Image 1 (cartoon, rainbow, N blue to C red):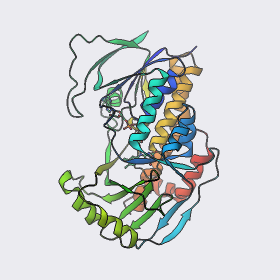
Image 2 (cartoon, rainbow, N blue to C red; image 1 turned 30 degrees about the horizontal axis):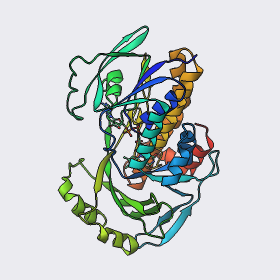
Image 3 (cartoon, rainbow, N blue to C red; image 1 turned 135 degrees about the vertical axis):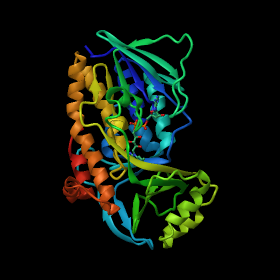
Image 4 (spheres, rainbow, N blue to C red; image 1 turned 45 degrees about the horizontal axis):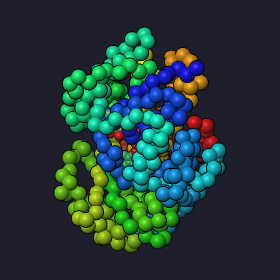
Length: 391
Ligand SMILES: Cc1cc2nc3c(=O)[nH]c(=O)nc-3n(C[C@H](O)[C@H](O)[C@H](O)COP(=O)(O)OP(=O)(O)OC[C@H]3O[C@@H](n4cnc5c(N)ncnc54)[C@H](O)[C@@H]3O)c2cc1C
């Protein structure tokens, strides 16, 4: 018998929708409380490494992702004038081909939402958990209207509270469920760097991810479909400034001024008509069990890192499918959660720690002795470990 019959997932992002689908497909009743609406997915695209594709196969959406995405194998490194200087082949591993599939974030989210609804999950938008009261036989939850990330949730008159066996916070880097469990013991730390992203038409010769480094600015070109790609820039942003969106275009041009050749031409073609996303890069890692009683956290809520291994969402998806498996395999909830955390901890924290160390190495920021030791593995070594180790 499963450890749970009814689960509330807070957060209908990549991890939350994957968990909802995995549980609902096992006949478990699932409500998803998502703060924002379906049309509000942030960001442009992301890469799904093959370990993520394997986990997505477990909820039946791997093929749908490959159909709309851009599969590829090798990563290439170019110099600032636009000449290829190195190619990094994918590591041999247990997850098969393609080694990567880059995909539009809104399309990915749509695929996961459709799968969750088809499996029978109930997605409630515009809400968040307001109160939780835990009992020996369940946890009573009151949902309230979401009023924004700085606002207090608004009580809904007459809204009944519902009883669940488990509440899972898949509510991202600023998780309120994490704060409920650990108060301010774990809060996001700004790395000193940020990410700019611009969606553009795909040049015909961009058939895999291409990295270009110019002193302290890194550019990554990622094809996400036959027609589209995005440029992502990692730049130093000392003091975590709050740039005004009206300045984004000028700032992107300024930060790309060191590039010439094809990348310089791409920079010059970015105009006010392009949507530009700006994300300060933060990290937070919870280094004790990701649950207490009937409340757990997973994905970015438990471990957020810079995107330097392109594995954050992959870890969220892995967390989700392994949690569903553990809850189905064990009849006692504490045993299930314990088994899940033991299975996930080292792999997810390795990605978080290694990604942060790689960011610091690339940007020549101060590293701890542990980080100096870690980066000796390099990106190919880290990728090989992730490709060979079972999630
Ligand atoms: C610049 C950048 C590039 C990246 N590139 C990659 C990549 O190529 N490959 C990769 O694998 N990963 C990548 N990542 C990481 C990836 O985006 C995250 O790890 C992933 O989105 C985490 O999924 P999640 O479901 O845990 O959280 P999220 O995707 O953040 O979802 C959280 C959800 O919870 C909702 N929510 C938040 N608070 C509440 C609340 N109080 N109540 C209700 N709902 C709430 C949010 O609206 C959101 O829908 C990148 C990250 C960044 C910043």
